[in-house]
Structures are given as C-alpha cells and as structure tokens.
Length: 127
Image 1 (tube, helix red, strand yellow):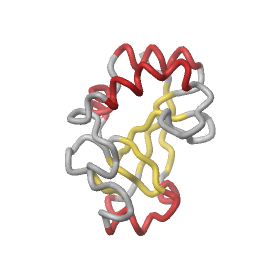
Image 2 (tube, helix red, strand yellow):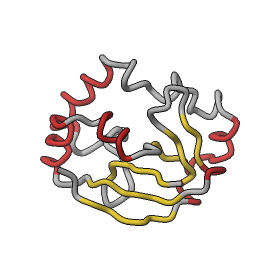
Image 3 (cartoon, rainbow, N blue to C red):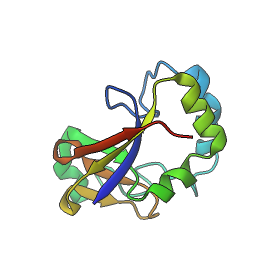
C-alpha cells in the first residue's frame, strides 16, 4: 500500500522534538493541538506501542504518515504547507509498504508504518 509523509532529507517529520524549524512551525503546532478531533495525537488514535500490538512490533522503526494522498492534504492546510515550504526542508515522500507493516489509527486519518519495510517511491515538492 502507499503511505505519504512530510519529512526532511533525514526522514524526520515536522513534529520531531528539537526541530530546527519550531519558530516557523509553532502556529501550525498550536492549531493542530487545539483541533484534536481532526489532528488526533498518536496515543489517542491507538497508534502507540502500548495500545497497538502491530505498532509494538515496529519497535523504534515506526514513522507516522497517511495512507491516502487526500488525507495528507486535509491534515495540512494551505497555511501549514506555506510554513513547511518556508523552512525549505520538507517535502512529501511516497512509500510502498506491505499492509502488514502499516497500522491505521482509529480516526482513519493517520497511520504508523515500519520504516524498515518501506520502499521510497518518490519525493515531491508540494504546492
């Protein structure tokens, strides 16, 4: 299955701790944290190792993403994309991952996948 993810050249997503771009992305983080219905945190979406047996098997090799290109565009609105673009560091990666290596959250919005099992199909700059 295809999985989509905003990430930098090191495979780090925008939510990573100690992100070099927090000063640019803080408005996005605040908006997402204030809208947990549309941006559930991983543990609330049952995507942490304590709540999900599949994710537990991934160990430290898990990455968050989206199992559909429309969902990533719903999660990150135009303002979010403008902030991500302003950093100059993030792009959308598309991976092929076996279904056994992907767990979709209860919300149906986000997923976690085993990065060791993912094959990069392409990277693209976003609009």
